[in-house]
Length: 164
Image 1 (cartoon, rainbow, N blue to C red):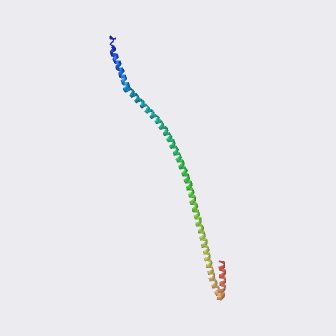
Image 2 (spheres, rainbow, N blue to C red):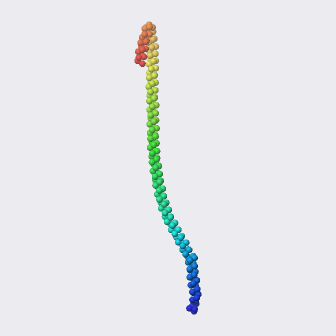
Image 3 (cartoon, rainbow, N blue to C red):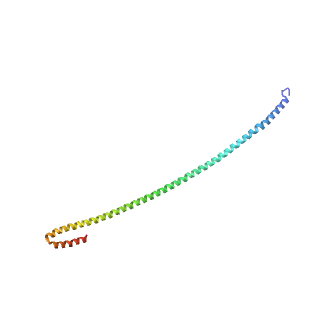
């Protein structure tokens, strides 16, 4: 083998050197690199699991959010309806109160008109009595004596007052 240029001592030395280098590299570099890669792989897997959990939580939160929005809308609708009913009741009460006040004012006006009518009738009767008395005095003055006229006048005045 010497003729081929192969030397056993050199091959053996290279084989020993390769084995030593492989041993040193595997102990010093290869195992730490593999452990570091394994740790990194675990962290990535944990990150993926955490991401999945966060997605599930996010979906749950979205569902809760949608439920809360729906409940809030329902409550708002109920409050609006209650407010409308309350406002209608208030409007009815205000209208009823206004009608009552208007009726009371009309009644007071009717009473006042009736009282004024009675007063005017009394005034008219008094004026009619005064006018009749005046006319009777003039007629009687020319036809009767003062004493007879006075007696007749008293009688007629009493009759007119009894009518009024």
